[in-house]
Amino acid sequence: METLVIIIRFLVIFIISLLYGIERQKAHKPIGFGTFIFVAVGACGLAIAAITIHSDNPLPLLSGIVTGIGFLGAGALIKTTDKIFGFTTAASIWVFAIIGLLIGLGEYLIGLIIYFLVWMTIGVDRYLESRGIGSYQKKLVIKTNKIVPEKELRKALITYTKKHKLISIEIDKGNSVMTATYLIEGRKQELNRIPNILYNTDWLGSCLIE
Image (spheres, rainbow, N blue to C red):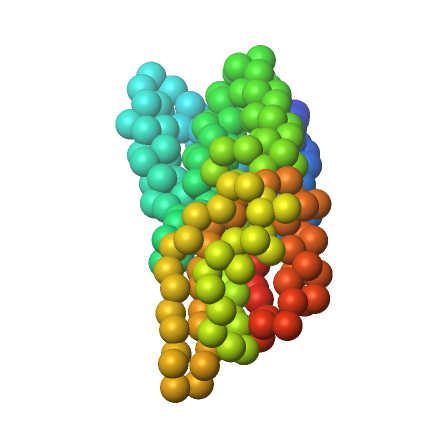
């Protein structure tokens, strides 16, 4: 394979993985641009090596790359007590390994089509997140400084999030405090107003949205 062709393939995959990785880092995702570049460029390099060394049958090496990247993607998953985050990031790592392989094999059109579809998916994902649709839920933990009826907490929430579900409630009678945990869903702007609303109540001890 000519040196210029190799350089062009590495340059193409470096640029497109850099752009996507920067967007993920700006969105404060657990995986930044460096990981996407390393995965995509590495996969591209191995694809070039596979067709250079084993031009008659490069498939065994290429399939091994795809399988191995799956373990790296699994490491991007973050588990909390009630949810697992990071599926989009994990899938993105796997997809960029595929894009790297395709660019390394010289299949620019297929690789760039997948890349375009990835950006379209991220755009829709952003829209849904801004509207609070689907799995874009937040966990709200409210700690009170006295025992109050749970309906008082719901009354404070209902203006800004009609979709809320009580997950747990703990009452400490000795200290006259209670802790309520909700899953809330709504537009980001509305959810961000909840702490200010709760601050004006006389029973709030603290609150946390995550």
